[in-house]
Image 1 (spheres, one colour):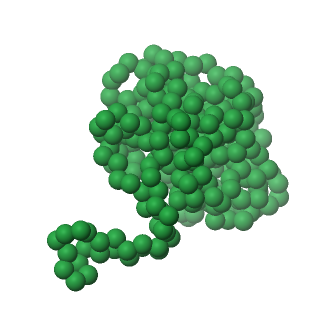
Image 2: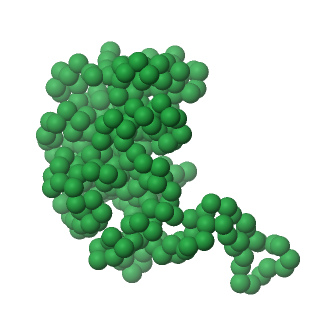
Image 3: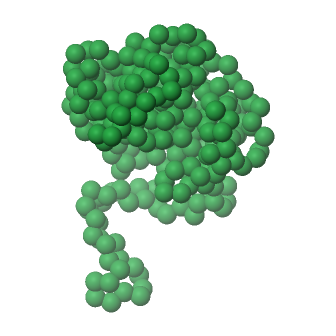
Length: 290
């Protein structure tokens, strides 16, 4: 099988490549991975693995149009904005998306009633999407006023801890949950602490996922990740989800995460050796994968 990954100049592209290398080296699978990016220089990079090829987006779309590849879910925008990518992605449950998945206001309003009984709460979401935000004090004239169109306005959470949770779901009941606490810099994981795969947060995620999707179908199916937080009182909150691996999902290689195994219907060997309560830099995980 040929897999295409869009927006591969990102950490998500690196994660997809590392997951692929680990899987084909372990199993001898003859798949090929085509990492694609809009940057003209990207295609001139040479992968260390003979079954991984770096190409330009134009080549990737030609492959998809000729039905020569499927899309591996590591991209954020291409499957939303390109009709060819959306059509090809729709053929497989692991890559299929719906437009409302990425409408944050609509998503919050959909999730809130379904998960009202869950330990993870959806922040209160306001009905207006065209808003004027102004402070209650220290404002004169139009100072400190924001006008926003097509916005999702939610209650402000006093965040104490932030989490990213990658999930691989095989069927209605069987899912592997890989939670980690993170500190972020420029939207990327900077420091990471792996959490128990069957601990408190993982069980809360399981409850949340099954409340929304009792069956392995739709938004919480196959391959996806959640961003969550916890306030100072200990309450967990949903921030957002994406129908793809998280950007730095490759840190979960040390725990046995293998999205290509899921796609092939192969079970995974889970390891808990590094779930020890210690913080590590993202780069420390990279050094372990040399």
